[in-house]
Length: 89
Image (cartoon, rainbow, N blue to C red; front, top):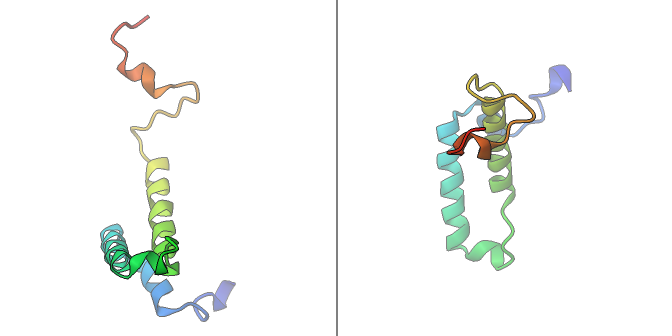
């Protein structure tokens, strides 16, 4: 989209991209409570478009944070169960 990328974005989209992780979590929780009060989207159980957008942005940020975590074990052969073994070989 280049130069005109922001031209077609809604206010909500602009807010989602600029909001902090805490703000996104709070907004998602508010939407979730509203979704529950209103009967799970008419009984279908499907999440609203706003909930899906907030959730995807939260997941994207958490994945990026995890990828850049310096404490993360980057060894592809590492199994998390090995870290908790009592009997080391």
